[in-house]
Amino acid sequence: MLLDYDRLGWLKVALLGFTALVAAFLLLPVVFIVLLSFGSSRWLAFPPPGWTLKWYEELFADPSWIEAALTSARIATMTAILAVAIGLLASFALVRAQFRGREILRGLLLTPMVLPVVVFAIAIYAFFLKLGLGGTTIGFVVAHTVLALPFAIIPIATALEGFDKSVEDAAIVCGASPIQAKLRITLPSIRIGIFSAAIFSFLASWDEVVVAIFMASPTLQTLPVKIWGSLRSDLTPVIAAASSLLVALTLALMVVTALLRRKLQT
Amino acid sequence: MTQPFLSIRKLRKAFGAFTAVHDVTLDIPKGEFLTFLGPSGSGKSTTLYAIAGFQDPTSGNVLLQGKSLLSVPSHKRNIGMVFQRYTLFPHLSVAENVAFPLRVRRRPDSEIKRKVADMLSLVRLESFAERLPAALSGGQQQRVALARALAYDPPILLMDEPLSALDKKLREEIQAEIRRIHRETGVTILYVTHDQEEALHLSDRIALFRDGRIEQIGTGEDLYLRPATDFVAGFIGNSNFLAAEHLATVDGASTIRLADGSLVSGIHANGSFASGQRARLMIRPEAFHLERSPNTVELAVEIVDVAFYGERRRIVARTGTGQEIDIRPTSAALAAQDVTPSHRAVFFDPGTAFLFPA
Image 1 (cartoon, rainbow over the protein chains, first blue to last red):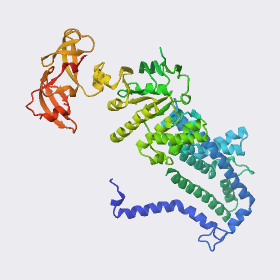
Image 2: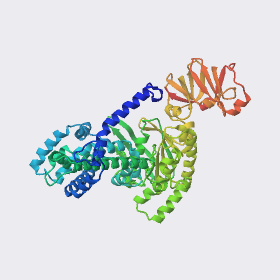
Image 3: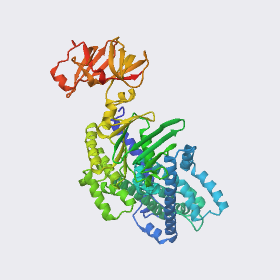
Image 4: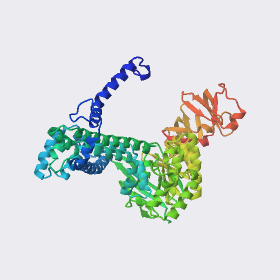
């Protein structure tokens, strides 16, 4: 290859340096937040004058934070279930079926990924206001499912494309009905894709803030909305602690995904 | 009239304007090993898929012991099938793959256990029961697929080019396994292949497909020794075709003139020919001899190349009109002789040659 890493010579150092810089640029804010959440300064001074866990104590002592975290988890779980169920059906249609407008349908289903979120948020806010779904859990889940669908469809459709349909045909010749063959053979064979879809759509809802701000009511707030709201009223390190926990759960889920993928593939 | 075991009646399958299978009619007795042979796109796989239920025929019928299969969905036909591609269930062990058809039939556990053990011993893979398919070679995977297809004692086993993904040595090995398993189980097998050697090696009878029709059906010997058309002659075995002109036929023996002007008589004619009609004379490479003997006629040639193939030698010769022909004398003849470019002629028995319309 023209650009072989091993033959770059001194450029290797430059490349490494540049890569490190980009990584630092992306990660430093997160590192700052985590450090500040353990710092003893009430005014988020950096470097912190001392270290403490009291912001976490305050966080866990406040039922409104716990409430927000549980709301987030509940909505994200329901979103993941719904997105995977719809994503599975949509993937079968997109991968297996031959019909006019299939590419248009694929484009439409993936649109939420590229559409400016705020546009979608305003639209669905106006729409749900009419339906009376604003500020309800169902409204939250429906809106987040639309946003999460591309993240469910992409891994499932990719897995299904890599699965030879003859294997399903073989199950049918063996005596399994077409539904049985899909449940007992096809779904287990593409389980890595389904699992990734579940994690990604959970995360798409878990850290979503724009739509959530429009959907939220005083009694129904997700964790990102609560962080956003607190940020505007008073700047306390409790926010840093809450943000750190948000990041920690996301990170943990990504690690679990990576580990499970490795285990399932061997 | 006794009822045929499996009967294909005027089966037709059209895809839009293209007709893949033209009114194929075929009776298959119980226990037969029948091969559908033909080039790709000749309709052999489409016919097989219609029997399996993956293709709905445009018209015609498929009857098993007198009952039509067409209204029965694939999963209720109780037919065994081995596919061209590897189709083991990737997340199930070898034993569970073989058990799958029995589990969907809700057979008792004790019976499943016994049957799986029987089947794995039939394909000689007992020690692989707990492996996952990904840990098996291609040949082993196809043997497990065979065990799975036979586990529920289907009356018919369909095989769609099951060996085409394997290399030559492995292919021959598994052919021997398939022959043994056919002998031991007595199952009726419909086998699809484009490989004529495989067809000759395995089958009781061969149906040679061409453009959606059966060109000829018969034993391997029938097709090889008594080809009905020049297509059959060209597809089964190697054949030389020489341009000829038909002069006269008396009592089934024809006299022809070859392109180099020589006259040959005593040819077996397929069909009737008019005087002066253009024709093609087919001679098998092994029907040529290097020495003259009674009943043979001479063909003037010049030797172009002699290649050694171990069990036999292959000679390329050129006729007076410049056409290259393929000659493979049997080894007995070869041991006695040395082929040199000084050979100016080869000999053949007109009784082993066939005349086809051009």
